[in-house]
Length: 536
Image (cartoon, rainbow, N blue to C red; front, top):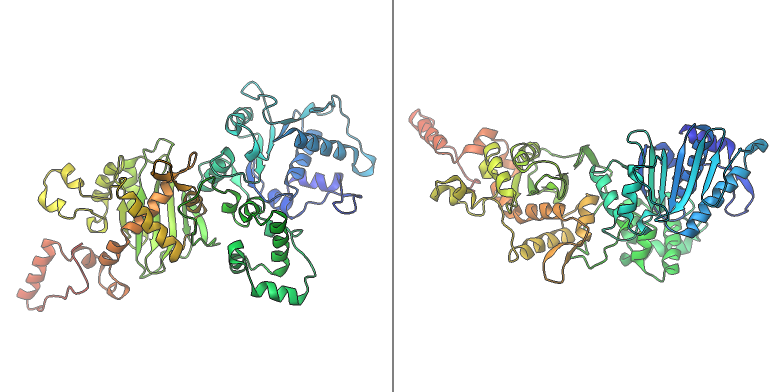
């Protein structure tokens, strides 16, 4: 427990939600999760009414009472919420244990000053006051940011006013669609591209969101007739939810006129539920499983912790970006034998040549020498040129395998390497991915899922991310699925893996063919069988 939380619980009172009596402020489960995982920079996507904002209001007040020269700023999305937060501060100040009373100086509708600590708490509405480099904020709390007007511009000024490395920044909100500042910041935090630590608070982890004493016959009937369109089988399978939880959720669905998309956004079960696309995604049916085995191994690198598996074959798909902070260069790894996503890498700062020379070979080699397909539009041609020097060429997809045999110029040879997408080929490539992940292939990445949900067909017929979103992880996955058939042909089956790695990699090289004949001359005939191998 943080020092601020200990002061909150020992000093402050709150009104009981049901009796309205003054009771000691004891952190609830959601508040404890934030406090236990506290970081100086936090972003919290959450379900509604879990007490998150009350925790941060109390925390900022306590810091003003006990820390010198604290400048705390609380910004909400509208005037009503601003007045509610001010009322909370007033209540906390007037309800302290043992008759304690804080001394205040200025005390108006937006600002309270504490002369003993020379500290100030300001409570305002987004857009009502501009903050910038001339201001100094030591403690910043921004609530329901997804509902702010011009959130990007406002947050830029606020974040610039907080000293780097010393100030506290907390951002929380329920979701409000894809493509806005809050959505992008959350996904960047997941991907390791934003400085905030993300703490997701789902509805099912909040004890109050349950109906107790459900009769056994009703509970049995509910569990025997789960509503697939409401996602109930998935909630039971993945989260082990019982009738008491599902009955509460059904009451919420009824209150929202059976608008399941809105219910999922306001009471999310998984992180991706927080954000619903404004358009119609091409990937409306995704075989996504949230797995505790999906862990972060390095910045931008996530993987299932039980892979690679001995004897399993893997395929990789790569999308290439410039490495200047816009789109990301990505790698998506799939297990051909289990038919599931096992790893992903993404970085918006890796240069295309380094991506091909270092990162792709490193990851693909780790996954039992995965077969790899690279999109070579734009910067991808440089990536695949470097990749061919650092990784076995027979494990790199070639659209034109004869280019190496018929062309002598290096650039001309590269014309057949990798995968080129166009307005003609992209629908087919995306269609293959769409079919795979809706019918059989399991994915585990919330980043990939998020991008799939915002991948749409635009009015001009082009396929890609909706405005404000990205599709680089989608393209990487599509590349992997596109080359999957070739990978199955090239990679030896598990029964063939008893052969030495050098043999498997070089059986069709001219020098090794000559060695076979040398074996014949020295009495080691017959030549070893090449059954099961091919020239790809």
